[in-house]
Amino acid sequence: MGKLSKAFEKAHAGQKSDVRHETGSPEQKKVRKISDAAKILSAEHSSLAFLSDNEKWDARLRMSTEPHSPWFENFRRLRTAILYSSSGNKPRTVLVTSVVPHEGKGFICANLGVAIAQDMEHQALMIDCDFRRPSLTRLFGLSNETGLVDHLNDNVELSLLIRKTGQPKLSLLSSGKPPDNPSEILTSGKMKAFVKALSAQDENRILLFDSPPSLVASETAILAKDLDGVVLVVRHGTSRKEHVKKFVDAIGPEKIIALVYNAYPENMLESIIEKRLGYGYDYGGYYK
Image (cartoon, rainbow, N blue to C red; front, top):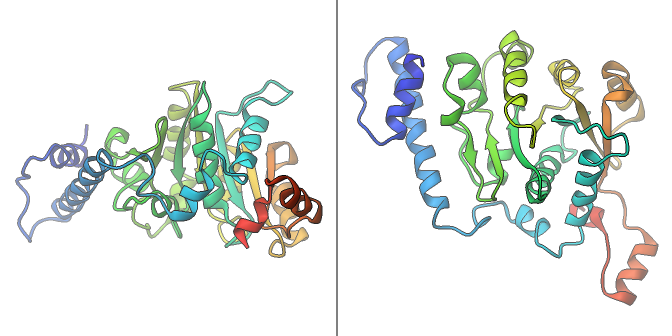
């Protein structure tokens, strides 16, 4: 374990660090930064113990994951399509992405993670690779002080970075503070080794990678090729066909394991069913 990992672990256990003065070498300053972040993570873990499963979550996420939520049933169907496909090939590493910003990929990734964690045979680890605009920690009411960046840059142990979400069998590795070179980090050999090592640990754990939109981040297409499959989020009225086609051609159509068409207009037939029978599946209406 490196010096940074030791300092992180020391702070995480509630012990005092011997490098708490204001001046020092660049390495000492970096150690202090990670130690401070560790205290925040420790407080998060303590507070979650006194909350209900999802009390700290974003209100939209809590609403969508209610047991009888008609919207969440769509995520259960998405989970089934991914984990129990007719081909029999279960992907272990899944990229959730979009072509342009503001298509809802982070929210889709969060709900899919919850759905997989509710499955009897699986657990889920969400990994926020959107270093430019991370969203998963905000959705789950957690901080983004440390994360994947610290593991790849400073060799901080993953056990000190992976957070509980308040949902059994669902954990989160946040991105950490935005680095100066996000593209280089995500396409590095260390990132490839990280994916390979993590996916080999537990065959029943599904890894969900939330990546930046492909049109604004070249590393997304490269990352997609190293993972088993891609869930592509396409928002109604936002994505352009030529941009979607360009991304699919870049990674290969065989990589697309699911396409989520987000925020589509309310279907007239579903509206009639909901009014007459008292239920409906208006998944798109929620996002409007």
